[in-house]
Image (cartoon, rainbow, N blue to C red; front, side, top):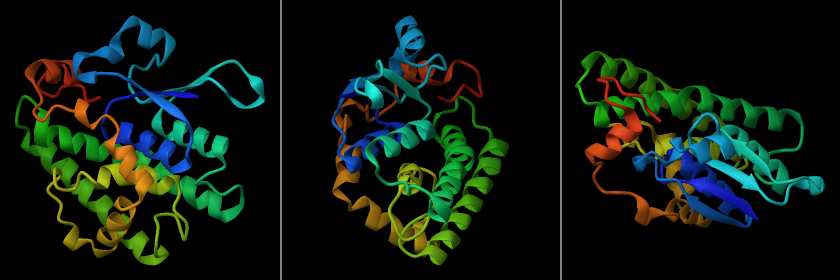
Length: 234
C-alpha cells in the first residue's frame, strides 16, 4: 500500500492521477497546506525535509525493502511508473522523449505557471512587472506545447499517453485562472479535452475535492505564502 501525502493542488493532482491511471492501491493522507501542516516537525523529519507535498511512502517497495519515502513530483512520477510498469517506455528514443517533456514541465511550465498564478491571484501587493514577466513566459510555453502537440498527434511525448501528459495536464487545466484562451491553441485544446475525459484522470482530480476551500482565507494565505509582498509560493 502507498500512502499519498496530499492536498488538492496541481502537484497533488499529478500524483493522484498517476496512481489512478496505473491502478496502484493507495490511501490519501491529507496535508492541509493552508494550515501549514507541511511545516510540522513530524512532516519535515519523516516525509519531506524540503517541506512540500505531495510525497509518498511505499510500504511494499520492490525487493522486500523497508518502507520507502519519495518526494518531488517528477521523481514520484518516475518511481511509480517504474514500479507499475506504466506510462513510461522501458528504453529507447520513446523513453527519452517522455523524460525530456517531463523535465520541460518540472523546470519550466510548472514553476512559471505557479509564479504567474501567485502574482495574479494571491500576492498581497499588485506587482505589474511580475504579472507581465511571468505571463509572457507562460504564454511562450503554451506556444511550445501547442507546436509539440501539433507534431506528435495524440499526446505530449508521442503516440502514447505517458507521465509527460500527467505532469503537464494539471497546469493546463488552470488555463482560465491564467487568463489563457485555449481557442488560440487548438492542439492543446484537443489534447486537453481528450486527457480530461480519461476515467483515471477524473478520479485523480476528484480526490479530496471537498478539502479545497472555495476562497483562500488570510490565515491560509499566510501559511502558504508568508507575509512579504512577494510571499513564498509553495
